[in-house]
Image (cartoon, rainbow, N blue to C red; front, side, top):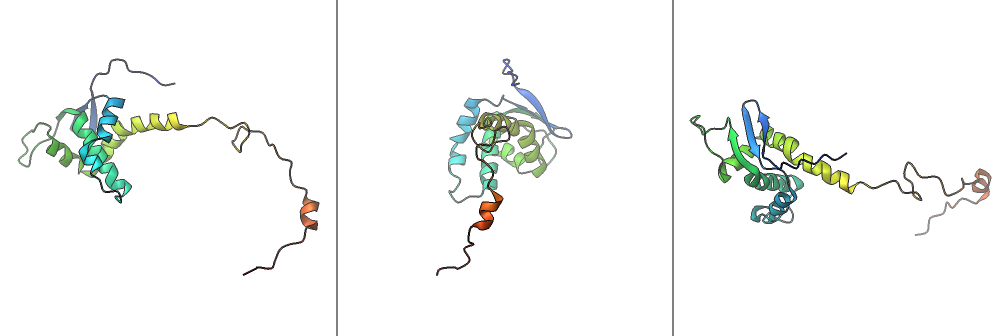
Length: 151
């Protein structure tokens, strides 16, 4: 069952020990805006899936991050989120993975559920019944085998 959260309030997500971010809800509007982000559209056509994923995650985070805790500059002073700081945060592999798992993947899981198909009543799906009779083993044995190759 799909549970709707009608409050549409931002939520805090823990990305690492002592590091958490407050994110907007992952809405259709946010995803559509991210898909048309100039940084996402600028990814070269021949780019790998990984390069596309990083560009998309950074563009999404720049739109979604409202606040954070436990993030500072090189001197250890707390800093506010900025596009550059958000990109630098997602350049840290464990943070990127946590962002993908706790935020992005929830939207993608719903996308996968939406794309799932019901069992086909006339196809090879697990719940379908057979429509063809099994081949006769004696008929297959009496047919001449084709062994010559034509070139």
